[in-house]
Length: 162
Image (cartoon, rainbow, N blue to C red; front, side, top):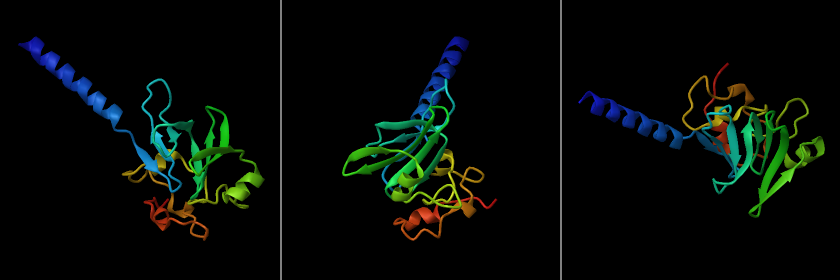
């Protein structure tokens, strides 16, 4: 009888781990791209950038993002990436992150690191739906000065007063 109880407890534990592996944190950005935390026990638990189809991985282990309605800049020290992505007419474009390209994308800010929905590069884990303080972007980084932004709901994203 004790063996059956232990076996049952083990099955429940394995089933619980399976549920945890399926429920991953994510956020859909205004440009349709998705930041999603991937469960990978061998690596750090950083977010991955997915195409709007929710399946195609564009960048892995991203540490910082800057985004607006059409572009996203991604920094990943692990993969050595500092790239700017855009999706136009169903095609994914990979652009450099030099000043000229970022100005054209609307992400360059002279006295700051980002001119998207936030005025600073932020960690993708701060954007997951359902996060609570302290796992939220700082309110002071909301970019209320950028009139070109088209999705006002993102300017109301939950934030932390720090």
